[in-house]
Image (cartoon, rainbow, N blue to C red; front, side, top):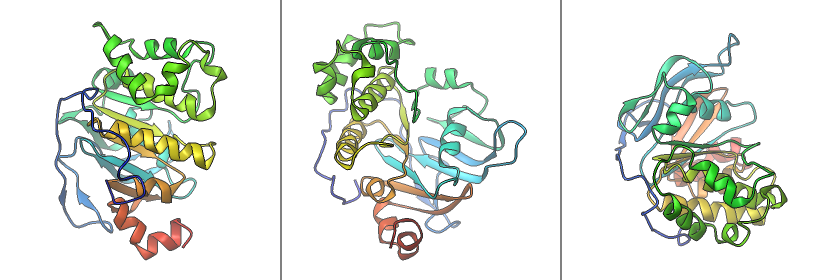
Length: 273
């Protein structure tokens, strides 16, 4: 990890991870701190596009993550952070650029087909079935599975012990942080190659945010790459192996979480000094 307050937390049980594919990151010139991402495990490469016939929101935007890493997208409101995530998941058409997962070009695949190909996505809102129990939510996550998924469910209960305790409780009765754990657990039931989280700590208290970041670290240490959009930029960069600062849909700064936290321009413009 990046040397922040979360370094010693979590575990390194990799048995829950989909073992296919490894990427490599090397340097290149470009935006400040930019890196060559052509061989990254997941990459949204030079993405330009918007919603429907509307104007472009993303402008030559590139984000990527490698196996076992946490990559965080931060920036001001309206910077295109969630749009970049949705573009990678196939929820809007790209006018330029591509999306590649584990060496495969998936630019033209539907979101459903991207899930089948190993992409797990947890949206910010409406990400659980409130009338179903915790365990039923996890079972819904295994909809693409044709094998016995009981072992995966047991691993998720190990990662999120509170979910095992509340497995027969309707998910709508859980706290905000517990709901997010259900949403992440349901995505993990697909045995994804990569996990994408859109604002996982939105609307929760600082204590719950810290707990959720602990859980995210644990998931990453199973070997699953995590690409995450976060408004709590400073805290997110503390756990990030890689960070992307977007401004008006463009890459403004790229580096390790530690590099961005120590960059005076990033601190002054985006982290409150």
